Image (cartoon, rainbow, N blue to C red; front, side):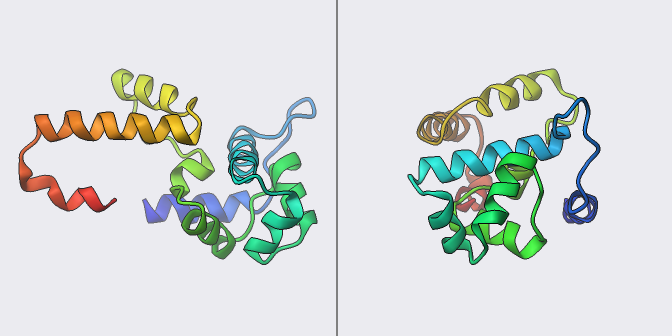
Length: 140
């Protein structure tokens, strides 16, 4: 996964090709995630930028043009706003399994509050399905 992230970051700092004026798919996902994070925190672009140590112009480029920042800024966003880098960047993890793709596609549609509820439900279901040997994953 680290190799995939490094590869993505290497090519994402250069804007992906645009099609008919639209941002590339991965960058569009990032733009949407950043805007959702900021709005869920009720922060202006200035406040959000200040919390990350970047300029308002940077946040504007992320949200409106899908420009992906350097790795250390991505990691700060992920840590400070409790979002995985995979989700932030729109990296698919379903590996072609239709059942996992269905779950993933629908989980992406949820806002933060509903996603937390879904996580609690899934954790409860998984606790019933799996042995205690997987307890170390609970801290994720």
